[in-house]
Image 1 (spheres, helix red, strand yellow):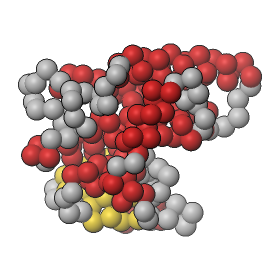
Image 2 (cartoon, helix red, strand yellow):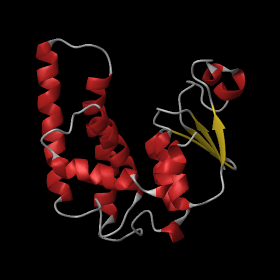
Image 3 (tube, helix red, strand yellow):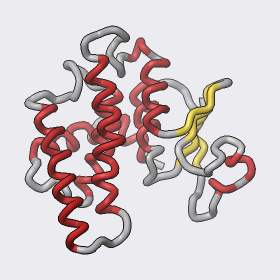
Image 4 (tube, helix red, strand yellow):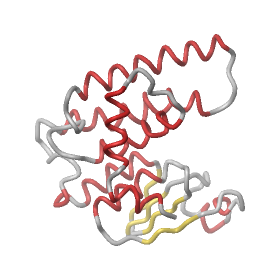
Length: 194
């Protein structure tokens, strides 16, 4: 199994998950400053030159969410996804998709280009609603789904970590606590350590 990776990209999510799984994999680091993601060799893996990409035998997957879903199911004995058919499986899908489709764009609006005060106010209103929804869904639990850490926590905590770094979690102490707890896991340290 081979993960194509660059720091400070969405590739951190599948790398963190691979470290949680404790399975062997090859890490192929691409230097974006040197445009190593635009070489013919990498474009043969990902035609758009984006990261991450995972190659597992005959399977090539793009998009961090798809890779995380695949990896959690590929190793069911590691229990990083609720079992198929269980009551937790639907909420697991919901939180995985919500993190990627609703939370990530709301956070990235503040990370990306400059906006007018009016645009920032709209983005802030949307982000607050998204963060309130996550807070309510999390309740007083440590994990998003069931009583155990899953790939949904990897995806959610990685995006919330960026939000916290950007000082966007003010007024959401429960989410700050959630991020700090999960980003102190040993697998995170391995995933971000070069």
